[in-house]
Structure formats: structure tokens, C-alpha cells
Image (cartoon, rainbow, N blue to C red; front, side):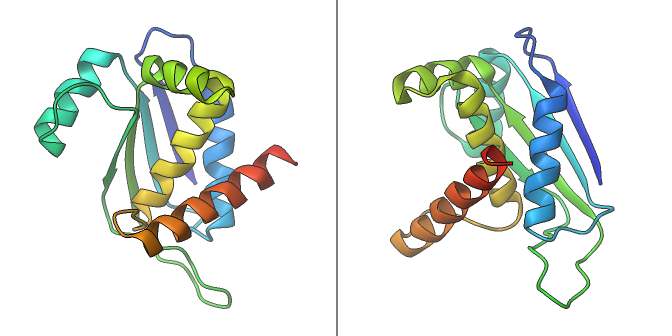
Length: 149
């Protein structure tokens, strides 16, 4: 897997940690071993501009997911598709606030947002109640597995 993590946020992000988490999530979801993912951490102004440009929403957000080749989770006994999974854009400043509010800190929030974003890249959504249950249940399972290693 090619996982690139770029820290343009000025926050001193642990890029190796996020790359390892991403590899874990992609392996667990049976993404092709040659799939590509790029994660970029940015400041609030940059993510606010992207949020307005691509999502037509005002203000900074926590994570944006830009799927590329519409890869989906691999199935048991089936060869997964090769390609570019896509790009994630994270905002550590927003993650810090959310982590504090949730009582679990910035790193745990960044782990959650990275996992959440990868699931979006794999086609998961949470607009409908059933989709929400499935996506957030899977997100919780993946994070529990990551943290118990």
C-alpha cells in the first residue's frame, strides 16, 4: 500500500502513527495491497476553503474525503480491485476541540476521523439511520481492534 501523510497544519502531527492506522484499517477492510491513499493535515482556513468549494458548506470541518477510483472493501476469497483509494484532508485544530469535548483527546479524535474518512472513501455513508448504524458500528470495531493490538 502506498500511504502518504502530509502535515501542512503546523501542529506537529505524528504522520507515522496515522500511516500505520490507515494501513491497519485498509488491511482490515481487505483493500488491495497496492492501493494508494493520501492524507493531508491542514489548518482551519484551508479546510474551510475546501469545505465551501467542494461541499458547499461554510466554515472549517474535521475531515473531508475525496474518493478516486471508487474502490470498495474486498470480499473473502475474492481479489480486491487495485487503484487509488483517494485523499483525506484532516484539520487537527478542529480535531483537538472535538477530542476535548468528547473527553478522549486529540490523538483519539484524529484516529476516529482517519478511520471515518477511509470508510467514506470505501463508499460508506451515514445519511440514513441504517447506514449510520452500519458505518459507525464498523468504525467502532476498527478502532477497538487498532487500540487492542
